[in-house]
Length: 167
Image (cartoon, rainbow, N blue to C red; front, side):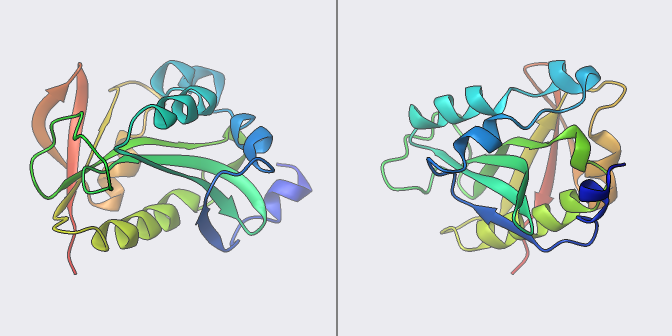
């Protein structure tokens, strides 16, 4: 681990809008090669978000360094069309990734804490859903450790998980 990466252990985590100034750094974030089939690239996700009124996305920062990316499908957004046909009260964790250099430094749980805090502000939000490809190097252990539960449903062959949003 390089000194600059090691210095981020324990960094303050924040969710920030992707701006013209931060775009290049955010789209440059990459998961490990073995994880690439498991998650869409950030450039694809941001492009997709611009054409979907349900999308809410942010860069994840450790102090002042972009370390990851999150995108939600939120049918409560103004103009949203509920393209994913989510039941009332559900918000979908559509994308969630960390650059390979910044994995296993504690950013995942801290980011999910911030994401859940954001979801609690959404009108009528009750549950955060996600899905993952069941694969070696996949996020299942992380989600289970954080408190997600399997719903028993498959979404496009991905395992669906949920966590209830408590006030």
